[in-house]
Amino acid sequence: MPGTNFSTNRGSGAPPAAVLITVGAAVCAGIAGALATGLLATLAIGAVALGGAFFVSRASASRPNGNDILRVRRMLLLVDRGGTAEVKLPPEFTEDWAELFTKVNKVVYESKNNPSSSSQLEQFRKQAELAADLLREGKDPLVESPELRAGPLLPLLEGVKGSSSLPVVSQLRLGEEEELIGAGGDSLPPDWPKPDRMDVASMEGGLQELIREIESLRGTLSGGANGMSPSASDDAALRTPAQLVDAVVLTAADGIEDLAAGLMRANELASVAERVTNRATLLALNAALEATRSGSEAFAAIAEETRRLAEFAREATDTIARLSSEIEYKVGETITAIHATSEDAKTSLAELGGTQPVTSSARTARVQVIRLLDQSRGLLQSLGVQGSPAREAVSFRGRTPEGPIPSPEDNVENVSPPADKSHAEGMLLIEGLKPGANLES
Amino acid sequence: MNLGTRGALTFRLGDYCFAVRVEEAGGVLDADRLAQLPGVCDPLAGVAAFRGEMVPVVNLAQYLGIESPSIQGRGYALVLTRGPDRFALLVPEIPKLIPGRDLREAPRANTDSELGDLFESVLENDTDQFHCLNYWRIFETIIPPAGASAGRNASTERGN
Image (cartoon, rainbow over the protein chains, first blue to last red):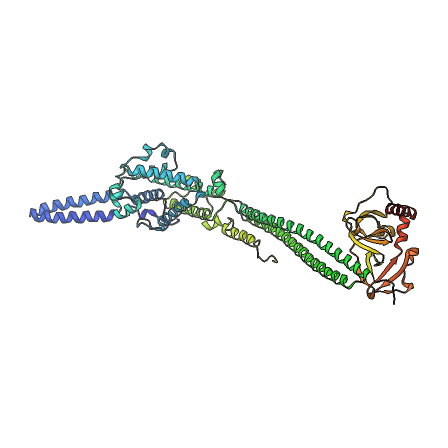
């Protein structure tokens, strides 16, 4: 983040150690002086103690990035562990690092539950797991694993290796370390090989590589905009909102097709009923004709009953025909409405960029990745690499490095509307086709 | 007024309503199984089975030059009887039986002069006027009486 200076945090643990050593040396000098009972001896011992305190202070000041190394290593272990639902922030992670830790934890945790969060993150996680295993065994990951030498973790591991002059594990509280790696104290990783001095450039390179990796993950979540398309299995798992609308329309069309088939069958039966009614009407007419010609009262009574029967059948047949016509008309209206709604939804989704594969969790992961990118850039700025080629390399595509750094809201502003909403709207269409639903609307 | 009939079967052709006295009517049947004959004049629509006999069916609308499009493909045959002779009128709708008590004879001034010799009388009720035609004369103009007599003679000979 702009204005954040991490150099104030570097070596924050050194002054207390120096003070302790100085105080201890002074105490020792006092005791030795008392024992030696000589002013000269007391002065000599005090001078030695002060000299020791001076060298300890210098040694502490020479490792300003110890906490950064710790944080990076913890971040790797976090990726290895897979994240947790509830973030318990270690005390070393403050301010921007704390937010970065939270984001990484969330993204990694969501990637476990979301297959669409891509094979990129899975590959990254596997490499981090391999690196963590090698670290636990006390081996150099860059020496033991060729995959890590070519992987995205290379700069980061080099940075960690180059800055591991401190006994890292010993600076963690035992309970935290056990919680972090999920093992007992016996399985704590041994000390890392100690290089001569801290390599800040390697740290920056590692962080930049991490940013590139996250950028790649963002591209994957954006539907292969950077050329990386999801695999076939991911295609099956991901559905664009337009495809979702198509699926809803298809489901509705299937239901309407069944309804239309039932209507056709009902129409056939109505036609048979109409023929029967016509025959009954003819029978009644002929009976009435014969009764009129013969003048028989009995024949007339039978003819009258036959006429009533035919009239009743006629009314029933007319009612069936009218209802059938109304249902056909409403089904036609419903089909038209579904198609119109589908087209409107597709148009809206296209306007909102909804052609990208987004599910609810994938969108959340995408937003998290974008925020994570911003956090990483802020960290890079804090490390003092503004305006460097690496800074330009990690800038957003199509945006000038001099331009303002986009906020996460800027990046997610034009994404498609929530898939849940589209799904809910699609379900409303289906609900409208259920028996008993009000078709008038 | 004594109309000399117990009632009339009425039907509509175009803008005209026609009536057949029940004494002349033998019955009504569905014309969906009307069999068309080759080489006959246009007003003869075909033949239909009525109580075990074949009766010729005359398209009255076509004979009178009345446009009645709904009669094609679907209609009813109103059978007229005169002794042993029978023929049927093809009508587009099921005829309605109106009792004689509801009918009265219309004044001669209201008759349609275009019907000429075919016109016999006019009956009316509270809503409509019904033209009673000499349907047998129409039939004899289509099928000459000689043929009908020959057929009747043959039938008589078979009966003997």
